[in-house]
Length: 306
Ligand code: NDP
Image (cartoon, rainbow, N blue to C red; front, side, top):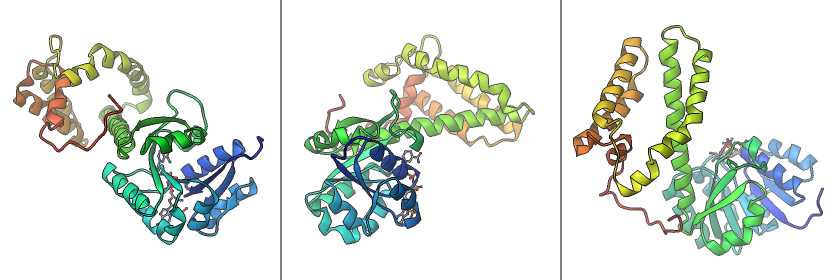
C-alpha cells in the first residue's frame, strides 16, 4: 500500500462507485464515501474508507468529489443539503445523462461556487483501474480544472479530455453508446432470425465473432469518417439502390419468420430516405444524409476535437 498523500470523495456506491472507491483505496488515497443505502459502505469501510454521515461532509473532506449516481436528476436531491459545502470544491460527475442535463448541472454547481467536470466512463466496473486502449473516460469542462485533477482521474481509467464545452464528454459517450446499443440489438435480431429456424445461437456465434474482427477493416476500406466529413460517398461496388433491396429482404425475412421486424424496418426506411435525397448511386455511408439534419441547431460545442 502506498503512503496516503491525496484524498478523494465519492458520492454514490452502485457497482461503479464501489469500483471507483476500490481503485482509489488501492492507490493509497484517503477515500471518503457517502451513499443513500449505508449498507453499501460497509465493505469499503472495512478496507479503510471513511464513511461520511452526509453528502456535505463527504464534499468537505476532499477538493475533488466524484459523483456516480443513476442519473443527473438525483444529484440535485443528494446535494440539496450540501450547497454551502460546494464552495471552492470540484465535482466530477461520472453519471450518465443527456448533454443538456450536463450543461444545467454544470451551471448549477458553478452557481453554488463550485467547479464542475463531466465524465462519461466507457468501461464496466470490473475494468475500472485496468490498463488497455479500451479503458478510458471522456471528460469535458474547464481545461484548468481538468489539468488540476487529471492524475487523480487517471487512477480510474485513462482520462481523455474532449473540450471546455462541458457537454462534449456526454456527447462522445452517447455516440459510443448509440453504436453499442444498435449493434448489439442488430446482433440479437440476427440470432432471433436463425432461432426461428431452430438454429441454436452457438452456431451463429463464430460468424458474428468473425464479422466483429472484420469491422475495423470494413470501416477503414469504406473510408467512413473521411466520407462523412467530405460528404462524398463512393458507391461503385455497392450502392444504395442495391442496399435498400437488401434491407427489404432482411425485413421481409423477419416478417416471414414471425419475429419482430421493427429494427430492419427502421434501417430500411433510413436507407430509403438516402435514396430519396438523391444518393441512390452512392455508397452506404450516404445514410448519414438521412440521419444528420444540416438545418438542426448546432450545439454550442467548442472545437478541441477537430
Ligand atoms: P446504479 O444505478 O446501480 O447505482 C447508482 C447509485 O445511485 C447508487 O449509489 C444509488 O444509491 C444511487 N441512487 C439511485 N437513486 C437514488 C436516489 N433517489 N437518491 C440517492 N441515491 C440514489 O448505477 P451504477 O453504479 O451501475 O452506475 C453509476 C453511473 O455510472 C450510472 O449513471 C451509469 O449509467 C454509469 N455507468 C455505469 C456502467 C456500469 O457498467 N455499471 C458503465 C458506464 C457508466 P443506493 O445504493 O442507495 O440505491
